[in-house]
Length: 306
Image (cartoon, rainbow, N blue to C red):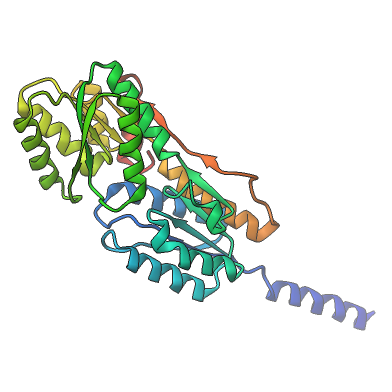
């Protein structure tokens, strides 16, 4: 009996001494350090990590730099994580690094940018919105509001997803439009939008591609022009949403980036633990946020959730 009990205690000790190890997931996103949009994605990643009990490392380059981003992906592959989350703003630049991860047997999910190329690069699925279709919806809505001549403000030149937004916008808008390239410096954007409005008084519509970086300064420029200009923006910020509530902006397009970070991390955690994975892409947007809805999400936007 003593020997039997010793065996039971020994087995128990082994069970206690060998807990299940937490899975490791790496997220590599292209978002620039000063872009508030990506802090919401990161919040989603971190909440999913807490809920799922996994270890997550979130990385991004300081500026929109595809060479630096590909190096971050390569470094993640060398760590041999249990899963990798990537955004794909430039498939040509990032494909070799993503395919290296897939070849190494690392499950990959793409988020935010790259819905059209994700599957071809070997990713299991994509969490995000179709950028062209979202732009088309925005353009049609602004045309319904009487828009005839527009500028599409691109604050991250080289990001294919933003190009798709502008192209979709142009198709949905149907009128005349011009792409206004800028950096993501709000002061520069306000100055360039103001100059465009001043040089062409027929411009009645501004389509911004990021609320905090381009949407807010575009609203300021439109107000300073002293004439009626409909300003809309992709994505959300508390200040831009307040402009929608106040009638100074038309609407925002919400792709729910918190969900992008949360779901991708959660899916990879479930895959590592149980082999589970949804059977296809997950559309996180687009959702049109007009004045009727904006007031409801201002507080959540300020908290880094919407």
